[in-house]
Length: 199
Image (cartoon, rainbow, N blue to C red; front, top):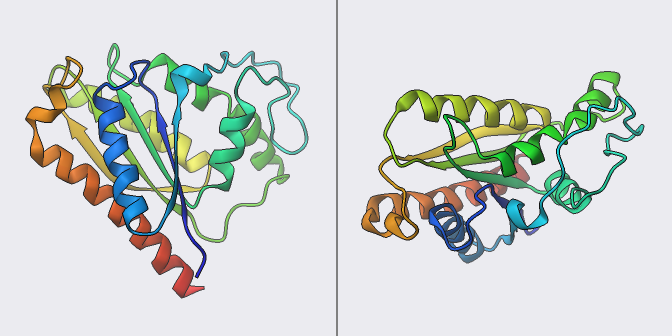
């Protein structure tokens, strides 16, 4: 059976912050189940914003790099995808949004039929933290991630919303959220395995 590959993207600009901690737990749990894992720090790769140049290549790749190509390749090759972001001004972070917007070329290629849809969508999860507890902020962020997942043939399979989390390290006060992050890692690998056996 093929070793599943789980790719996690930290949309927070803060290393060792709450998103980073939660994703680390997701990745660790997935690895313990036999998955190959990779954690990408979007804030460190720092892809530039989409230029809306309307000059996409035929294969869906953006013609500009700016740190984006490595993210694009890893996301397209993943068997499972996890995205994390803090809530900034009611939605996802600028770092994560920059990554998502750069998939405009991919979306255009899909619309033209240059990129065939996957036979079955891979599983995906969204982890989101915010200092407040406003449900509409989580819903705004979820909507953005759902559109991204739809573009890259990923099923929105799991989510973890963590209110009341602000200062770096404050997630440690919520053991139930830490446990939920581990559950996400295990669940995504299980879904990948189930998909493999059904083929």
